[in-house]
View 1 (cartoon, helix red, strand yellow):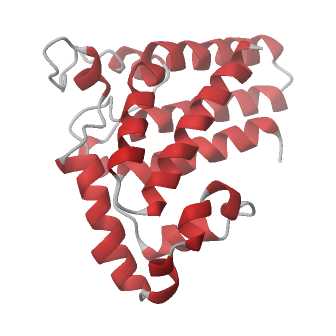
View 2 (cartoon, helix red, strand yellow):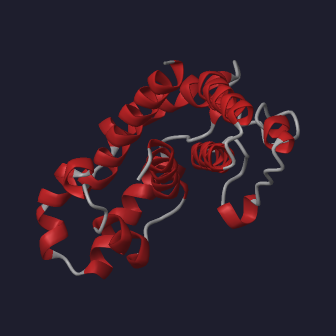
Length: 201
């Protein structure tokens, strides 16, 4: 797997984890990732993962934790962190809307079950879309397009994701009650910082 493919896969994984509750199919896919024990070390050693039924683990433990860290107690929206009044911008004035429009990216808020397009899961998914476009440009040997797409990724990280995601993920590490979401937040935080460093090279 190339670096571009790995980056796309990690953005997709983190986006999925933080945009909606877990389900059996998704959890099974996550547990089959090659280096899962490195990415989710505490989750793999967690006694509840080994002793509870999958139904109870997902519906009574993981999804309760997700509700706490993504809906009830922590706010996964950029404008909550960047606006002085700490309000979520749900309208056309949201800072990411024009960027999404420029790339033909449309967010179905109802389907994604988010109230605003600057949800962390949506922004992570947008990064995956940019990287997938970069991969296509690489396959077409379009060096200029590759360069432009990497610049856009770097800019989007600087102006948007890194403006709030580190604080959100640090809060998740501190407040999540399950090793799964603690590990996922640590992975997300480390990956975003490493990816920014990679794009700056």
